[in-house]
Structures are given as structure tokens and as C-alpha cells.
Amino acid sequence: MARQKPAYTRVLLKLSGEALLGKQSYGIDFERAQAIAQEIKEVHDLGIQVAIMIGGGNIFRGIRGIASGLDRAAADQMGLLATVINGIALQEALEKVGLFCRHVSAIEIKALAEPFIRRRIIRHLEKDRIVVFSAGIGSPYFTTDTAAALRALEIRAQVIMKATKVDGVFSADPMLDKTAKKFPTIHYIDVIKKGLKVMDSTAISLCKDNSLPILVFNLNRRGNIKKAVLGEKVGTLVY
Image (cartoon, rainbow, N blue to C red; front, side, top):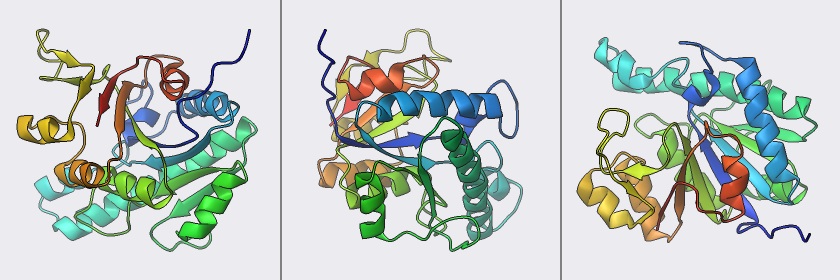
């Protein structure tokens, strides 16, 4: 039987820090990181170029620091450093499953990660290396959602694949409201008008202005990353 042709050739996968929690309440579950790495390998084996933007909420969320009285800029900087820790863990997991990986930090940390140089990153992807982005765009006040949108545009990714813990975009939080309606597709402007928590409004606007689609899907369902890149009906497409 002929192998199914992928719907995309270059994608940016947005992973929250919570994706690495597993069954823990804090930190990194390395078995979970390994499982995600294996799913990414299955996608890479299809010939798809993969970049990943990693969050840091499993270690520190800036919004919690602000609630505790921290200055917004300081809290966000701490959150950015948490993503670097996750970037190191994810790089290790990806290399353990046999992938070549480059960790790229928007904050200069020469001993741990490469700096962001657009043409170099594109070359890494062309050489079939996985690229893990950490530290957002390196500045406070910008979320890793916005960083994901920016980096996806810079590397000419065809889609942002936003991995979550629910099956797509709903009219309300499906974990709290059992009557919440799932949208198979939805327009950017409707996400903004309805105040749906897909990505922050800056990220949505950036994608809208540049016609970059966002595919929101459930990471906790094994095989969903592969199904998504093959164009199967998974999650919600924001376009």
C-alpha cells in the first residue's frame, strides 16, 4: 500500500511546558518527554521538517510571579529561563530516539544553546535536523504563543501545530462545561471576537495578517501529531 502523502513539509509544533509534566504536578517527567520525542520521530520519518517552540509553565509561569508581587519584566524573564531548561530536556529526549537536534535560545546562553540566526535555522531544517526554540523571542511581555507565530513565519513553516490537552477549539472550556461545542474549523477573527483561548490575541493577529493556519489538537491522544501532519481530521483548524 502506498504511503500517505503528508499535508505539510515544514511545521512548527508549539508545546506547552505542561506537556512535559506527565503525571507529575511540577517539573519534567522524562518518560513523558521520551514519548513525545518518539511521536516527533514518527513525523520526521515521513520526511517532514519539524521545529518546536517549548513553553515553561511546568517550572515557572510569569503570571504566577506577577500575582505574588514580582515585577512583570522580572517574572517573564524567569519564565523564559524555565523554557531553556525544558529545551535542554527535550533536546536530550529527541537525541535519545536517534534524531539530530539543535537547541536555539532567544536569550544568549552559548554554553547551552545556539543563538537565533534565521538562515542557519532554515539550513538546519533542510539538513533534517529538529530545531527546538526556547526563551520565546527573548523579551518580556511576549508569550511563547507569539514567539511561535513569529518563528513559524521566519522559518516559512506552513502551519503552527498547537498541542493542547483538549481535542481542539471549543465554545467554552470542555473540561468545565460538558455542553461546550467543538469547532472543526474557525476563522481567526471569530477566535478574537469570541475571546476563545487558542493563543493570545497578538499571536492570532500575527497569524491572521500573514495567513498562517493554526491547527489545535490533543497531544494526549497517541498518534495525533502524525495524523495532523498527514491531513487527517484532528482537532480544529484556525484559518
